[in-house]
Length: 414
Image 1 (cartoon, helix red, strand yellow):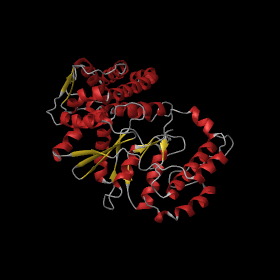
Image 2 (tube, helix red, strand yellow):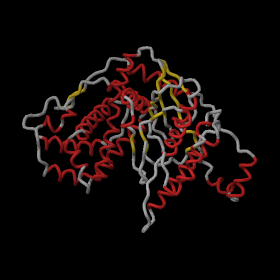
Image 3 (tube, one colour):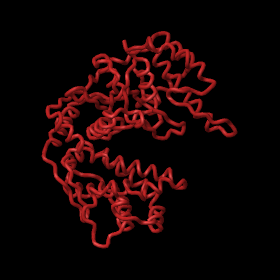
Image 4 (tube, one colour):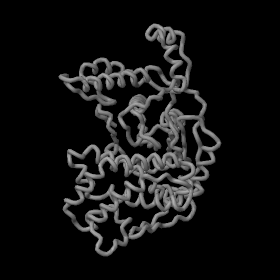
């Protein structure tokens, strides 16, 4: 998985095996449904045999245990389709809405807010583009969203549907979900029009417009994240294939956290003499081993080594530091763990495990340092801009990284 040094989102779709192409979005959806959306409440998920294995960035509570059981009992129930005016979609995913509006309300509201900000920012430009847009047939324009457009009103055109989608997404994304039928109806409507707009040929063409490209990509990404809840259909299908799917959480005890050695403490005192004074100011800062790393470390010693990929679904894109760590870990251990992608940015509370060979963490930090240097260089005027990724460093740094990489074969969790 690669990133440019602007911190833009990146994906690894081109590297996925066929099974991974199917499993990653499914696992992402499960993780998204099980997160509350509260700060740093990130869930990771993978399936091994007939067991769904889950992890969190924090400790596992009784509420977390109960939420998984409730979610799966809900999605096993008979679903129902939805009809919204001239829109219709036969779907089972809506059966999960009561659970989502209770357990994952904060996350749903966060996604609505982000759609609102993005579409409000582009509203005037989108309306102007629709006015001058060269229309085709409704089928050609909304080919990938026709499941939502079953019964167009008489005289309805591509332009009128697009304008209705833009206005509805802006207006209804202001809503805040509540566990009631009125809220569910509004949420279904905004999901319907978000899907129609996101999958339209119109939005694809606007994305190619260099003036609006970046803002339109942001809007499309946020529309797609809002529509991710419809993939609960995939979870329902998976449960039909594995009706007795079990689940368990990885242990929440911090076995991978090790205390500083006397040598490390002395080194910190030499390099940062006032560290303790600074640390007091950040008393609410708590480094965490992120959920995907917890899952890997928990399963690595128990899963057989194969040439296949091990997909991990996450409720939030992996941070840059975790992506680098996973890449180095895979190379060191001849494994192939994979998440959906990364924002290309480090999250401030990222911690590395202490129960692996420290040389592995050193190599990760070295690659992160290379990226930091490249990013700073790219921001300096009149300097040559260089890009690096998790696997390749800048030219002057390659000689420093390669000797350490030669030691990868000796790395393994303790």
